[in-house]
Image (cartoon, rainbow, N blue to C red; front, side, top):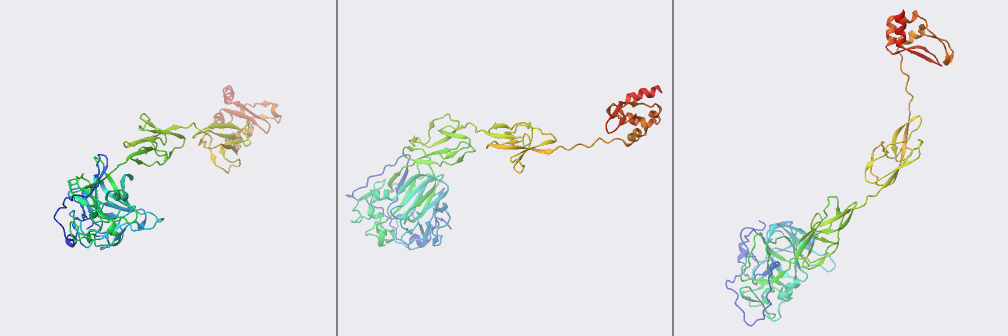
Length: 511
């Protein structure tokens, strides 16, 4: 099972475990004690030969890497996820390699056969750098791992929300323990002291514990080669106060580790641990675009010392960036773009925007055969087009078009237009059809044609002769005639003569 707290029985007893404590060594040069501060990550070294964490209980997770096959590293581990910057950045090394721990115990252990363990492998200058990021299932207060064979260029980064908030590298450990095993082993370059005043010769931290035959060691590790000058140290990293981290990243050539342990519960280092360093934690400035329509990005910026703020990377159509403010509405402390900030605390800065004066564009209305001169409309944004004022005899207005021949984009009269550029719109015309004549009741035509009116072909000055009785000979026809409101007395090519129906009413009454 991945990350099981139980390693194989063989792994637990493979080495001889010394139960006795290290004795206080007199007369050795002592390394200056690191001073822990309340805002920094505290790095404590377990006693020499320790290859596992002392943390147990709720919130603790262990990944021993024993269940994985040799080859590419997995993407899921007991502590969460594992991602790499390139596919070849992480490999599981086989049992017997110089890097694998022989136990998961927090007790100093020598001998043993080792185990599967991961590493970045060696690569040459100019090749892509390799990094491995462990994303934790939940933010953690403690991280521990066996740094098995520390190499120059190894870097540990602590992340929150993808932002690196603290960094530790192999040069800092070289400063504390020395870059190489002491030439006069084990105490030629002094000793380190635990918080309970136990001294450990620095030489005990160099060389794979598998090559020691006693605890405390009585001779250098029997595993020769570069491993004798490599540091084998179990790191314990304690987050300060309320701080947590959600990921760590290992990078650099020949970075090898084992027994990764995390805990969501705050831990206290035991007295046998050595305070190796106080790792400065950066404060983070987060930049907010402060507008849903803004584009671009300005990533979080972390620093432990004063620095210029990152350059604004946001933009917004129709607006000008005017700086940052600690208040979304601009009522807090203002900061200019790239202004210096002391990074004494985390900070969220909100972009401030001033709306640009609107850019106007002109639409020119072309009559395109209609009467009147071309007119213009100057606007910005999307507004309705001015109504058409052109006319054209025999035609009706049919809208606008971006091309004179009507083959472009059409717009109806009064349609919305975005005024994003200058544009000519051409009036489009349809021929005005002649309406057909109003149909006349056939019975009326018959009545008129049979003598209701007499008008000679005298043109527009013709003389009307009314003939009495024939007008009322058929009463039902007269009623139909009267329903039209008027009576046609004569219709010819040159003249139409009508009279109100009331005239015939009077004639009828007289008769």
